[in-house]
Each structure stands twice: as structure tokens, then as C-alpha cells.
View 1 (cartoon, rainbow, N blue to C red):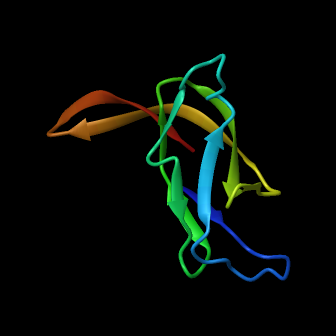
View 2 (cartoon, rainbow, N blue to C red):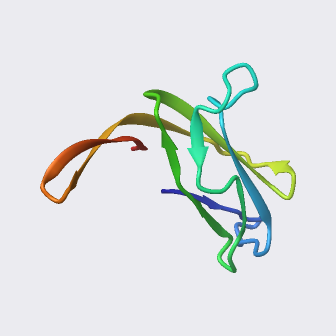
Amino acid sequence: MITVTVKNAQGEPIAASNVELFSSRNEADMGVVDTLSAPSGTSTTEGVVTFHMTSTTTGSAVLTATADGMTLAQSATVTITPSLTIVAGKIGGAGWATT
């Protein structure tokens, strides 16, 4: 789960802001490597938008966000690692998850 919080210069949350999340690994020359649950969302009264990201490719990605078209000052680096899911007593690869 990835949480983006939008705040003004005074540190107060900004509600109803359109927030978009981007992965550095989804550049035009690489195609779509990381899948976001939704590429954009509207911030809550607390200024929060939550995203989920999955991938089938290990490695690091830099996540950046925009709010109402303006790039937010902070970014985050996430590492994609293999995950495993146990269902009905069977073990199977479930793709990849962020950590």
C-alpha cells in the first residue's frame, strides 16, 4: 500500500485534490512494468490518497506524485521483491509485491 498525503505550505491537508502516482519503471521506452490499482484518486479531508502497486519485475522504482498537475516535492523509492501466497494448503507464486 502506498499513501500520498497532500499538504499546503503551512502543513495543512488539502482535500479534493486530484492525485496521480507514477513509477519510474513505467517510462515510454520500458512499457508498463508496475501496475497501480488506480493511476489517480481524490484526496480525502485529511489530504490522503491510497494506492496499491504490483509488479512482475524485481528491482527498485522511484514513485512520484502530482496533485492537481503540480509535482509533489517528495518522492519514494520502493523495492519490488518476490511474494508467496498460501491458498488452501498449497503454495504458489503470487507475483511480486512492494516492500
